Image (cartoon, rainbow over all chains, first blue to last red; front, side, top):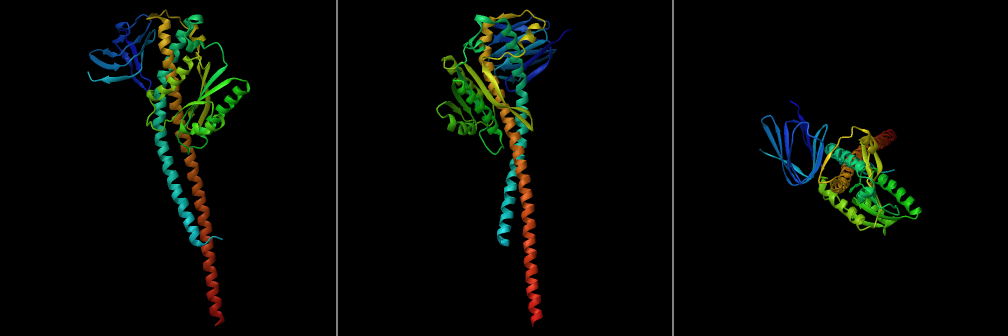
Length: 87
Length: 292
């Protein structure tokens, strides 16, 4: 099955970068989920939680504002501030 | 001719100085590694943001473009942000940035443009306040921060944005030292406003993916541009930090070596005059004994 390349980047460093199955993120106009081969899509993000699913592992990140870019080569979140939370 | 005691004192004082410079060199080397890592770690974000903006900017050109991207259409009033170090003892680090900035500022003044200056770093303020006292509108002191984070860059970006939005300036240029390698830091001028879109043409010719935007292209660009400004300042500060420690390390390495040379020279001189004195005393004793 196709995988989605997801990276979560904060100004100070890159927090996450790997191939995953699904990512849910809080958009300013509503939460959304991204699966592999999603149509190109850009949005701003509000404060909230990003959920990264890969197989049975789930990773959670709290972000404060940012920007999401779903392109042909993957999904990138540029977060203003991001921390990983224990799931 | 200095007495033996004086020479001994001089040697021990140079030795003490050498210990200090050696310690500073080691501290700078450790901090260099850390700040180099920080500068590296910040790159992906800046690069991604720049490419996204380049992507968006090609779509939003002309009248609808936000002011930060399009500029005011004039270049009469300039703001020059000069960022360097808060501390000295780093060779010509601050001076080389300030020199580049001064050349730029003098050029603008010669063309009859209005110039405002924002200083970042204590040493910069000290060096620019004298020649351009009335033009310095703001200055920042970064020595209180142990680490350079976004919250350090934010106030600087805020000052720039405020001046720009008040309509006081047309063009903003940032001077900093780009960190090429440990031995090479290049004083660089970076135009912040109007935003320079890098590789815009290249992106446009690529496979034009049809993007869906939420809310709208303009709204996204509107929120991204101020952030890009902050991030550009942040990466400049991080580069500066790494460059500062690199040039402090080099400067301290030189100082340690110089001190070593000096110790060697003084020791040679000391031993020689000690030997000369012994010989002299021996001659006196021997000739005294012969006379009896």
